[in-house]
Length: 401
Image (tube, rainbow, N blue to C red; front, side, top):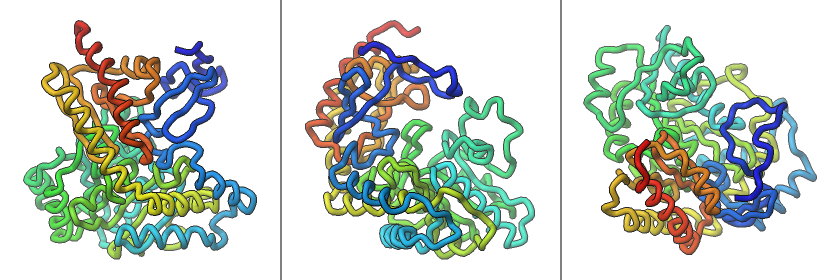
């Protein structure tokens, strides 16, 4: 590996277990560190860099916007908000959008929508159904909705009003919520990301949609990581042919420029009024231009088709490579959101992959996560497998510690 950089500045809070490299620049699906070493980017900034790095159409558009207006505030109309909102409504089949800056903020807004939905119906203590292994953010409220005791530890008391159930079991959901008049919403990721790349079954999504309709609950689907074309459709829930009432977005929507959004359908679109929610940076002209241009480029270059095709190729290659290999429990996911679950914690593979020239992540302790840019080619997918497979095989051949 290249000579390590200073691991942590003495002035930067020690909140990340960083790898000993600093990235300098990128092109397409490759990045280079400050020592000149090249890496194939299988992480995409954690599903953020939709168009890869230094995209020849995105960069000039952002430069143009930088020369005009970066920020104005929501005291005034922002034309780019209307343009991007209209496009998101067209793609989703929903009706209205609130813009913020991160996925955490989008999920926080969704939780506030659900609570106000309940209060407007006369429910004094609204409750929201959430899921085991879920991840919705690290604010106090989204942390409380998250299903990971490790990252909740040390931050109690958590926010009340959440009921947790296992994924993909409609009978447990019905039994757990039976005769509870305080339920106002069901909130889940279409594919759990940080929880280990666990897809929600399409039939289960349909069943939850029917139950929410029957009970007059909001169906809220967190598409922060799995949305924006990553699975081969604009939003992962679209594979089930349903419409949510509330859909938080972020990550890939701006191809690296911070942006979040809450897209809502008729049941939730008009819950908020002036003063109920807000943001300083959300919906700024630069972020809106990034969202508009990202979607335009995705459409013109047919990146949804690419994500589906190259993702299927990558998944099949990984399945072939690891078939029958003791220690590999599963290869799962859809499109360019894939996880390889091992039978033991595998965090050491982060450094080893880095040394081999591949960026990836390990989530839920034992799941190798691949969420590369949606411009990934089949040749680059094959390169990911060629770099990763020997590392996994060598790791699994070691004695379990």
